Image (cartoon, rainbow, N blue to C red; front, top):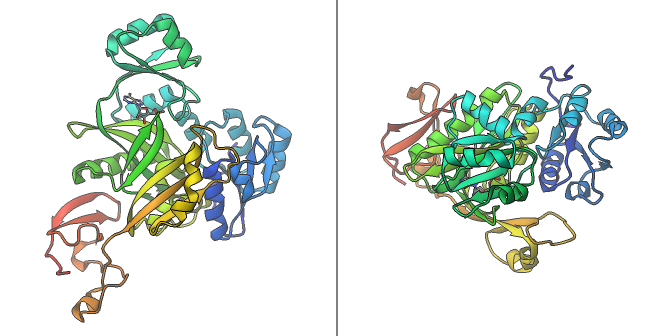
Length: 420
Ligand code: AMP
């Protein structure tokens, strides 16, 4: 039976985090700022999260260690989705575990994930289940070439993926993929890759960070550009999809939704991750509330924070040796360096990231504008006539204002320009 009755937790409570990587580390840092304690559960000694919070170092199937861990924490969350089902279920019987194990289970297997998305009318690329090398030719016949064969389970950063083009041989491709079960996906000739991050609380309120643009190198996220360089209508659609998926999952926590934008502006969802995401790291330095703080707020049942973006940003991962340039980055004005404390810089290993910020135009109150006082940070006033509708600052200097309703749906309305 689940120990989760929707209860909230006040600062002072202890959050148990399964997984010891950089996402757990940055979550624990955000939790500490809000007065929470964290404990980490992970199989490796010296994991990045264990540098900032005490860790139980044991394999994920060690039930004695899990029992001990459950006794030391008030609630449980995850920093990666490949936690074994049994581990999640074991903890969920003892402590509120958010997001729910059911959501982890959907997101940790690509076929289950795509079937779920299809069941809630969210478009993805065409795909086929492939159980053996012998089934591959028929699936390729149905989807055409190029196609991408992916391991259905435990894949990340392009691991367990093989491109099937004209020369590909089924047996070799199957072997290279390396999984017990495969999913064949039609190759998407995308214009851009974007993602949105949704936070949803125990009260079912949700906030969606603006779509960001992701550039990969060797299948690993290299750069995130904020905001994504896409049409406003596409951005609105991406946010609506993110919100819809989170609602239909019944999420409490954080959900990253990775998407392809096709050349004709259509959106196809590629992947879901029910946890903080690399493409949200910019929010630590670019937003009032970072994805990590939002994650803590959501799982603890606290009110969600403002997602206001005070700066545009370009986040670059420091992969392998790139982290060696920390000294130059520290000397750069407007650059925020984050290192994860990993001792060995292996190729392809995410060692840290740098976020380069570009302040957005500052906002002024009506009063300060009238008086001609210089710019300063202040909230744009609510428009009384808009009936629960709030004007965001994003397009203030345009004749078209972007509006967000209390439910988060956005539309375009006309309003008179305020002279800057
Ligand atoms: P994934 O592990 O599914 O996120 O894939 C890693 C990267 O491979 C994606 O971010 C894309 O750049 C690329 N990729 C994955 N699936 C496809 C697809 N069906 N069509 C085109 N590119 C893909």
